[in-house]
Length: 116
Image (cartoon, rainbow, N blue to C red; front, side, top):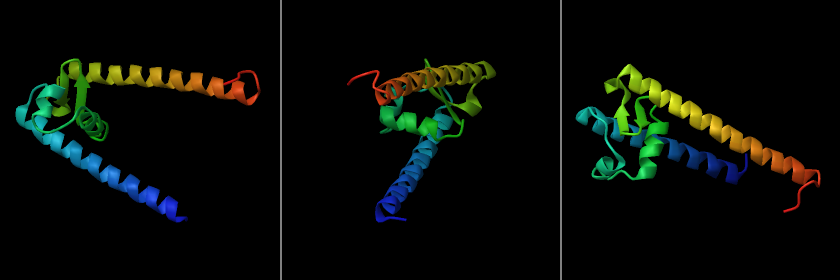
């Protein structure tokens, strides 16, 4: 394995540890407050918008998001959990559609059908 690959793997592990720490920090806040918290609310605890997203993504379903903000899934109703899951599913489909569009452009360019 090259030094660059080792450095990349080390950076990925470091990022994962930091993401796990953010998720734990945010979970503690959400469990203590036991209600929906907005990004503005979480900013009072020093969490940025990006950190909130990363924490939710690395919470293994323990943090949900919705129009009202973020909430610990253990304090959420079944309906809130369903809405959050459906929203994530919709977002995933939209992103997959965008990726398919980009792959189409790549194929067109690769076969000379599209110029930059």
